Amino acid sequence: HTRCLSDWSSDVCSSDLMLSSEKRWEQWGLNFGLVWAQANEIATTGKDAYNHRTRQWFTSVADQGKGMGIEADFGTRYNWDDNISFGMDIGMLFPGDYFKFINKAATATPPTQSPANTVSAISFTAATVF
Image (cartoon, rainbow, N blue to C red):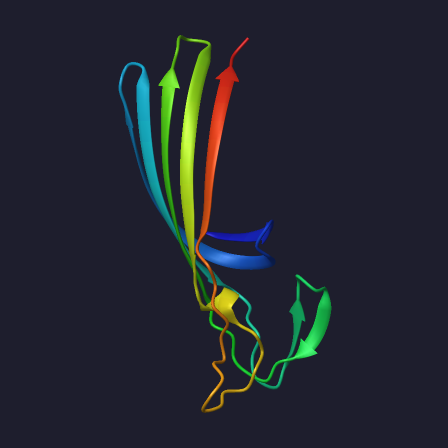
């Protein structure tokens, strides 16, 4: 699957693979999903690249990794009745080398990548059907 994202992380086209599963009972539902993504375009040594966060062109002095990371999602739903439901979702993104890129040439001392932190999100939902 290929898609272009324009969200909190970046404006980038990526190829991703999603595995998911859902289990439903009469009033309850559980779901789990894993997404692995790889950037279709990266910065390459000696070539011009565009930084979507700063909206600036630059000449790359190092190669950027393609791996965007792995996202794990878990959710639950409770159906109060046929018209009202409540839910909670938890997601974690484990960033890959794509997000660690800082455009510095490799040397003995400083790393060519910056640390990328795990991103977590929790959402609560209430829905009704009229």
